[in-house]
Length: 455
Length: 133
Image (cartoon, rainbow over all chains, first blue to last red; front, side):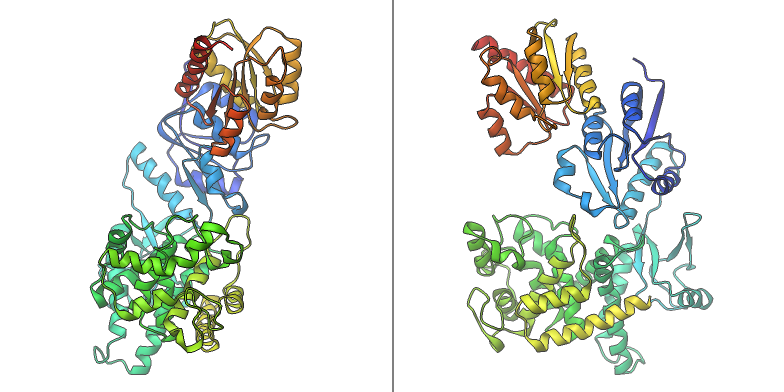
């Protein structure tokens, strides 16, 4: 049978609001919307899609689950991309979604930018036109009248447009004041200029740690530095709590890149390259190790415990000894672990160091110390050496905190997110960190949370 | 290839999938189909219609799963040699083992392609020709 119509983009089982938004992004593409089993069945019989087309599936299709839809669509259209979109975390079980045929998955609002990018790229390839991708950034130390190595834009949701705020990298005093008055914390940078933004933000952090570079007093410098650290840390708090369309993974990515750039400037160590050399794989963008590295480094900056660069490096390598165990094991799983998994988990601090030695990566003694002792507890119930009290360096306790924080703040399908304060309370109760270290972290978290609420 | 006139029982609780399987089988040249939406109804049809020669069944269905139906078929003196293919999204090794232990002839992972379903049918036919049960 020769199909009567050919489509580029299909939306199956979407609520009106989301469908309208996607329709706007895909404006110009031949669009098909289906909301019932009968409509899907009729489509499978008679409709064709252009190669590489996109079928987006959500879970409001009458008489058919999203998993059944994926199975039928993927079995019918072999050269089409079938993608899952939802706002419901409980449905976001990657293993099940992938098993049933979804080639990519989007949890809104966190993945809104990624979804928009996917559709916009496809649209650009199908109907031409310039495709420009913007990345959300937090306003870190951007001032009026200073020439930035990148331009910034703001997003107008009603018109779905980006409007440039700077002229050749300079933000006028008037526009700066508008941003300030409207307490806009997120602006956008074109993707090709994001590297320049990371460099700039990292250099700001480095400069703030050096006296005499400008006319700033030490108090001003310290306040500014703290404010920048809190700004970056807020990405984690934003994700822990609910996110809006401008938050989410892009902002986590921003914090990670700034810290990577910061470490490179301060120590000459390329974290990504070192990780790839040691593990043989490129770290996935949102990997646990990268997040822990960033959280630990920011906590070090924010609390004054240890050196931010040491914590960033230790954070990156703290779990490489967890080879051969199931994914995403954390200290919270320890009580229920048995057999080989338990043994491997208890041995991983030592194994991490062994792997680093074998790969001939020379680390400062304090970093080795942090890696070795990051699962010790002040009451002596930790591992591998059951050290007590002051024998566990505060740096190692900070890494332990960052590790637990990352595990507890990561969104999990079907589990309600904990607030940063709930996370802190759980870590305080279960991870065996000294009251002094906990208090310093709590002070920092409270300041960051207050800033976050104020924005 | 099996005789194109062979009657094939297609079992899936979702009509879309039944239609899709039939469509693929038609493209391979088969013309004679019977349908059921769960294992219980399929069991009734297998007992009523003695000319069914091949079963292509989904695994996860209400009332009676594909695996439960397979076990019934293999313990029935008349039906125990029925060629039986399971279609499922469950690709875990433990589940494949269960199906093999229960006597499945072949196992096709959903979502499937025309080629994968065709090759499974050919494998089952070849095994039957080599080693008639």
